[in-house]
Image 1: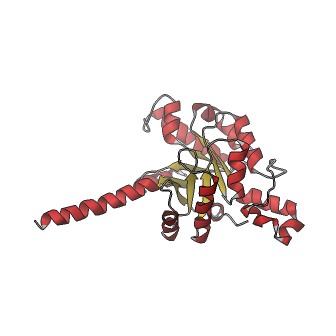
Image 2: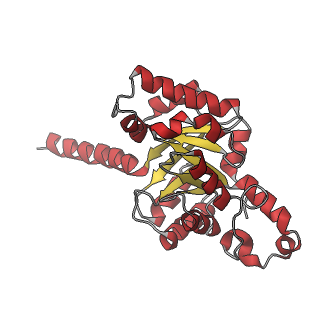
Image 3: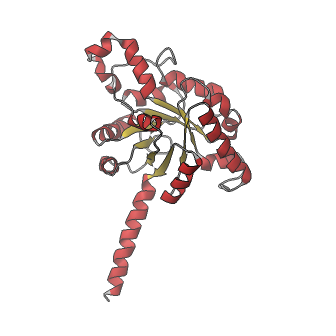
Length: 263
């Protein structure tokens, strides 16, 4: 079990940068780590991955200085438990609508006394061969509960309506705002400058900080990320596919322009 560097960084008041991982490539994980990305969010909700593939990405993160996290496909027990057992240090729980759903997610993701997570001899538990772990199992539980982040997404109008109760739950470490689905659920698709949407974002952020929980949001550019940090967000996530597209597009267009100039 490793210390969560992302959590440590936020506790020092520093901002964190991550991305949703969709490129399905271990070398891509390694490159992001070498470039200084704080964490990736392996996307098993919208992405094609399951546990076996996610495990390879987790190990690549660990060997290149990044914190591995997973967006699970739902808030059910196996979806959360297995990703934690392979070594994910954060679980992003999508499309929750009720406090009870979040309580279930916390129960599956945190050991007693906070939750009811089952103990298994996986990677995250050093395969249950560590004498120090086996000699103080409750100490391991307490350490794991502090290091493994449970992060519900606020991306539904229903979650927004009860966000304070969600955020105040023991075992909820922070909130990620999913702006696209939240705007859709509010009936204002992609109207990110609408007053009611801006008020909703500010409200979630205020509630998180009131309860000493972190708040993350999607961001598509360095300029936008700067604005989000200035607003008070503790972290932003981009999209690795967008990075690849932007970089490859700039290179290809530049080379083509050079070729045209030599005709």
